[in-house]
Each structure stands twice: as C-alpha cells, then as structure tokens.
Image 1 (cartoon, rainbow, N blue to C red):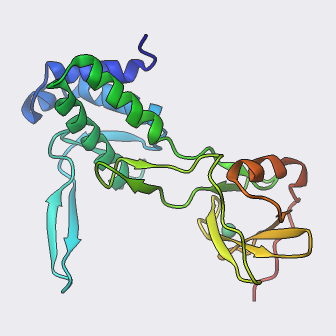
Image 2 (spheres, rainbow, N blue to C red; image 1 turned 180 degrees about the vertical axis):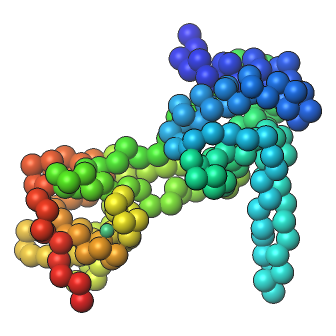
Length: 232
Ligand SMILES: [Zn+2]
C-alpha cells in the first residue's frame, strides 16, 4: 500500500513529462504537485515559479562561477517576500532527477525512493523552550549521500553535545532570533541553554543526552518572560 499520495502523483506526472519542456507546458499541474510534495516534506514556502535558480560556486581563488540548481524540475521555490529558497529548490530538483532515474527500474521503485526522501528530509519537530513560544530548532542538516540537498535531519534519538570542563558546545538554533544556542555547565545538577544572540537562558538537567531527553525535560520547566540574561 502506498502511503504517500503526493509521491505517487509526482511519479505519475513525471512518467508523462520526461523533460523540462513538457513540465513547463503543464505549469499549473506541475506547480500543484511539486508544492504538495514540498509541503509533505516540511519545507516552509509561499509559491513556485517557473524560472532558473543560478547558484554561485567559488574556487580556491574566490572566482565565482554560476550554475543552475534546478535544470530538471524547472521550478524555483519562493518565500512570501519573493526570496528564492535555495535548499527547497535544490531538493525538489534532486527528487525529480531521482524519480527519473528510478523509473528506469520500475514505477514502484520510483515511488519508494521518493517516499524515502520525503520522510528523510523532514526537519526536526521544533522543541518548545518557553511559554512565550520560543522554540529550539536543529542546526544545519547533516550528511547527504546523493547530493548536498538530499540530507539527513536530526531526530529525537540523536545525541546532543555535552559541555566538558566548563566549555560550551553549540547544539541548535533559537527560533525567535535565529541565534546559535550553546549548552553550558551551570551547576552540579543542571546545564543551561544560552542563546548567543538574545541571551535567552533555559536550564536543563545535566543528564540530558538526546534531543528526546531535551523535549521531555522542557515543558514543565519552561520559564516565563523576563528570564533573559542581561546583555554584556
Ligand atoms: Zn535568541
């Protein structure tokens, strides 16, 4: 039984649209299916447009060279303010290329591979830090085995850094200000999560080892507003 209708619809669409030109000719259907797949994957975006996204890569002497990151999908993913979203655009292109490649084996193989990438690419569910809706977000996704866009994300069973010898270790991102969150030793029994940018400080048990431990430890410990450490 296929559990992911957007993946099935994507593959079915690509079976009858084997190149960029035919995708562009069915702009409305393509953008609807691509948007459903992106939403299922967890990307936050506003709309898609049919245009080339040129990325710039630099050599060791900082000479930049531009190349398109969406040659197969033809679509660029946009934020509400019109900004082009590189990761979502590159991810969509890679999934389209993956589906084309797997269709050389079988339709079921293409469905399965797209399903795997949709599940693998879902970002970590944010961890609520305070009653004022501050969230803990994952750092940049880690490791890819097919391309820089098809990458693993953090999960609740992932271990988080533990500060050693009074040093701090970065473990995530603060949703409100996008500052890096460090874990620092605080007392014999607790550590603290400290945002480098806004100085939000949240105590956690120093035995916290995984993101799941962190999620379980926080709801009843959430501080109220006014708990931000003074700026230095
Ligand atoms: Zn912050």
